[in-house]
Length: 53
Length: 290
Image (cartoon, rainbow over all chains, first blue to last red; front, side):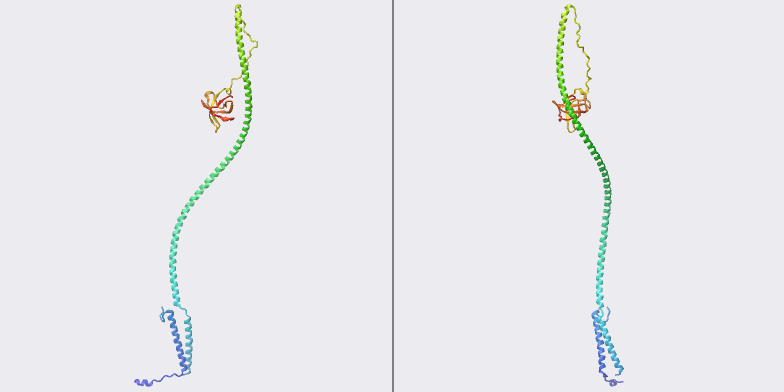
């Protein structure tokens, strides 16, 4: 097994459908924004994000 | 891309949107428990401080209350003793009041009796004064009669003296005539018969010996007490003065009053003034007869 062979087997990833990719990105952004908002609120109200004082 | 993958992507997107919306809504509307905790803690601390202050105040109040209670207890004890003392004083005062009321009642009855007696005495005095006026009028009348009688008596005494002088003169003439007659009869050897009076002498009834009233006692007023209507005279039992004798006080020809003797010494006597016409003085004459 040589490194050349490995790079030879590697294929270019291409989205099969851009519309569904946009849906997934939207879902990811929503979850990420929600996590940021929850973290911000925790920091504002309790002074920390993970610890329980 | 298979159909199943597409459906799953749609489901994931929808569920993620739904769940994120719920989470954001919940977090945005959730209470700030830390702030509440801090507020409650500060409230608790302030309340604890208040409780401590109030406890200290309560303790101070209790201490003050104890002191006040002790002081009030002492005052109550002293006031109780004062109340007992005042009750005893009140009882004594009531006892004295009842005794004084009894005395007042007795005095009131005595005063009432005295008033009655005084009225009776006043009435008696009025009657006595009326009788005294009558007696004084009778006395004045008797005195007039006595003066008239004395005048007549003096005239009669003068006549008697004249008659006595005439009798004496006649007796002397009789003796002289008898001597002459004896001288004339002596040479003849005869004697004159004793003379017999033409009118026989009769034994005349004589008045009884004068009583004490008629004994002439004379003296002077030695002391006068007009306040008590008393007077003293200068003669006593050695001169024949006795209790109950009545002396007349005169000044010149004026009648002043009577003295009723109530006490007798050897050389002086004391009596009560009666029938006072004028006030007697020391040196006025007193006598049993006017």
